[in-house]
Every structure is written in structure tokens, then in C-alpha cells.
Amino acid sequence: MVSMDSPILRGESSSATVCAMNCWTMTYWMLADDGETPIPTTDVLRWGAWFQTADRVVRQDFWEGQPVQTGVSTVFLGLDHDFLCTGRPVLWESLVYGTSLDGQITRYRSRADALAGHASLLAAVTAQLKVDR
Image 1: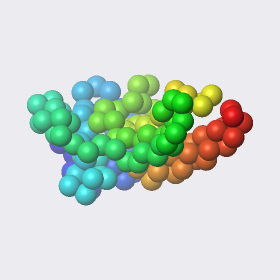
Image 2: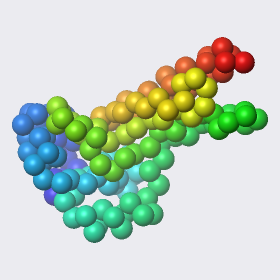
Image 3: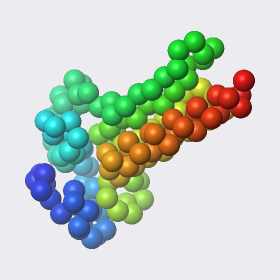
């Protein structure tokens, strides 16, 4: 297991180091007690027990009174979605519900990027609601 103070988590390691950890072995990701810091593990049972009860929601915003569920949900994934192994792990995802943007997915390498991306998608959905009416 890599410590929370790992060069990988600080973004200071080379792509080869990240690939060695994430692409050549199955690495699962949990959140530290602060609910924000990702911690890697190769222990699937430990990860599975954490995943069953973890609060992985970063932010959710939905509009009431729409004919279909409309909004943006951003969550911690728990698995690296950088399938081509091009750098730091992709561990967060935003998904749009409703409007003509329905199903749009954006993924991120940091929680800060996920929050910024969520805000951007929320603005886009707000604008699209006006167009779609």
C-alpha cells in the first residue's frame, strides 16, 4: 500500500510509476477519514467492505418539478478509470441527468477538479434547461 503522503498522490511521480501501480496490478481506491483523500489498496476484501458503506457522493444538484430527473451528480469511483494508463488515477466522475445533455460523463484526476467540473456542468444544465423549454 502507498502512504497518503505518496509522490503518486501528490502528482510528483512519473507516468511509469503510476502505471506500474495501477495498470500492472489491480489497485482499488478508498477515501481516508477526511472523505477527500484517496488511499490505494490491493486488498479487494478491504476495499469491498469499505465500498459497501462509503459515502462516495462529492456533490449532487437536482431540479424539482421537471418531467424527468434533471441535474448533476459527482462521485468518487473507487477504481481508476484511466484505462490507457496515461498518468495519475482518474477517480472521480460527474454525470448529467435530463435535458439534451443527459448522459454526459466527465471524469477527473482530483477532487478539486471534480468540484470545478461539477460546477461547470451545473451551469451548462441550467443554460440547457432554458433552451429545452
